[in-house]
Image 1 (cartoon, rainbow, N blue to C red):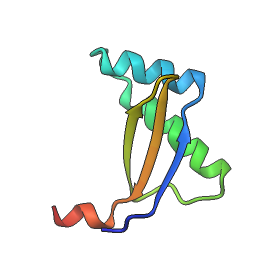
Image 2: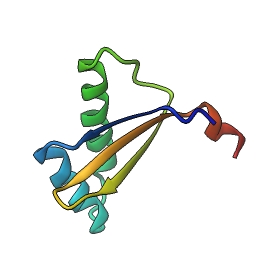
Image 3: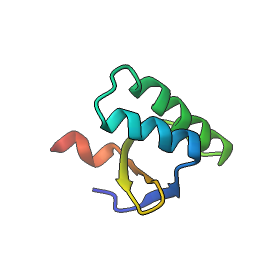
Length: 74
């Protein structure tokens, strides 16, 4: 698996969506993905295929993006 990851701290809006999502509110995944994809595009990076993870921090959430190539073999 490619160990290179792109990381950044979620902005306030994305952190709020993630908080609601992890509390069980449905129907938010598409909006969460749209926020992440927009950020990738602003950075000039391709959107897909990517593996998307989030890690809670003391101040919000860390967005962790990894190449999805290695996940196809799991």
